[in-house]
Length: 116
Image 1 (spheres, rainbow, N blue to C red):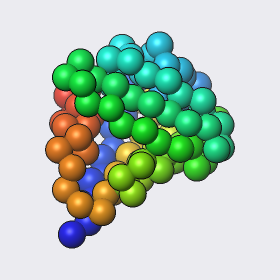
Image 2: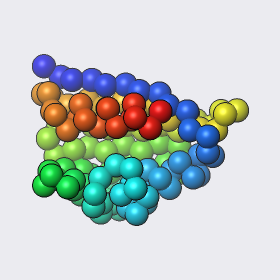
Image 3: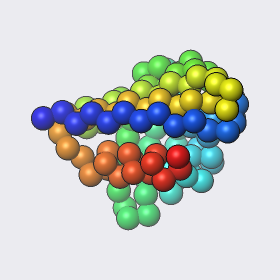
């Protein structure tokens, strides 16, 4: 059974600032994971570690600056993030899927809810 999670959030910041928060390791460590290594270019690798010892790895499939980021996870899942300028700032649309239920995916969906 494939799990599919979609979320739209509007952040009161421009697309360039939101892109930085999604692609710069130091910024990702502020809100997403405890330790991040990410080369945000197509074919680049990402390693995300959390304080509980969990680690997830991904390959960047797409990286269109301030517009779209797609990560392919080692477990077969995918995260696609699209940025759209709106009057209030930037709409961030996140679509995540995984071939089987993953606690990590559910927790990330909750993290997006918490920052909304």
